[in-house]
Image (cartoon, rainbow, N blue to C red; front, top):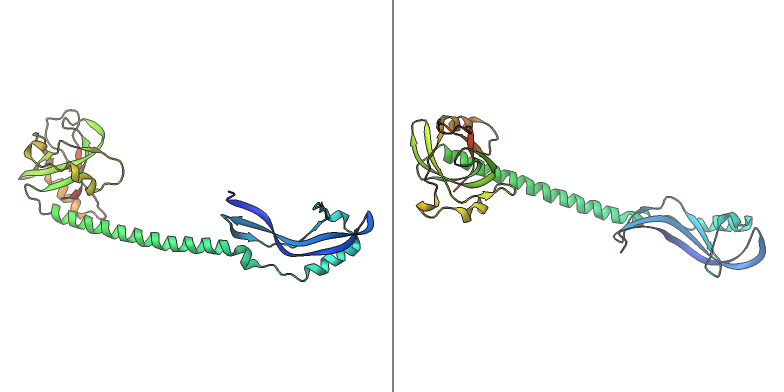
Length: 247
């Protein structure tokens, strides 16, 4: 199947009797008036820039225009006047494609607007919940380090707020994690959600509470970084989690 083709669009056709420059004997020919045209997936997408004559002998061989006699040229010129180029017919496929692209663009823009609005609502709800932290709350996070503070490939998991003491949050991470494969999605974390105490790591990780609060004032914030505190990690301190979703 040819997806894109160039072809002649036939405007008119008739049988004539004519002579050629080097052949004065009258003979029968098939005369076509055509115009160049293009198609894509069988739909017309352009053409009609000029009207062209095609002359075929009885064996179907194309006779080049340089062999036309003056009388034949005059007859062809008059015959061409009977036809106008159907521009709509030749370009209607492009109109269809443009309409499809326009409709697709409107649908995509609407979908994008809805998704952006949904993300904004989710972020607002996450921010509101984080402003009222309580022990026992669960959050979906991206993990930047392992329990030893060592860098690792980006993982996703659950964390639980174990307790709050002054400027320190005590956090446990789930034992089960998943490697990041695309955009963060809380639905993909549901199968990893701990069901018993044994599903949580026993290690308590301490993070800075004031640094989390300071992020609430930042605009367009969709995730919140948790900064590790303590001197028990010589390999790495810094941000260990990024909270991206709530239970």
